[in-house]
Image (cartoon, rainbow, N blue to C red):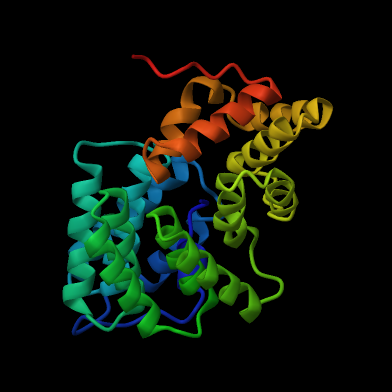
Length: 276
């Protein structure tokens, strides 16, 4: 669930889609790649401003529009510097990217990403399939689309895509494994879920520690659960009141979110029950 901008742009997705590439636009793209490694509100605000200037100067540049769509989505997904209509702007930017370059895999991924968070799942799946077809050997494309496909309800296909991406790269980034973790958790296979969570290895990402804490909580291993919880709260001090909203951004309300929240409660986090 970490921002995937860097992973998406490392696979050779840059395209000069306008009649001319505005001076400095390539540097903006590189900065957009770095944003995923410096995932902070300040970095988000600066990158958003840079990308907005870039698309004004090069309105036919698909990669800039695609990255801007991701950054707009992070106003909702990460809660960074929100402005009105975040998801609408994310969708509009993604569609501009696709219009500029229909065969650009990054543009199709941005469209799928925007549609996913709007819960428009039929259109999302079509865009995700196109993104995979356009770049079938890019592990990051396959993994990210697989994660979203799983979270949209097709767990078997989504997790199969993630496993395929891991086969491409045995040293795959830890975020590939989140769908596998949640798939095991939803099956109540908490021991497997814990094993997967411990292999994610993203120590600065709060969802990593939340996954470990929830699995330990379900297994009744309170001391280990408490340790993971302390790591989580060091990164996200108010996660007790924010947890439900954070998970429902990805999954919507349902049994999986309820079970994860129960695991966090069993780990010692005072997650409020849903208001009636």
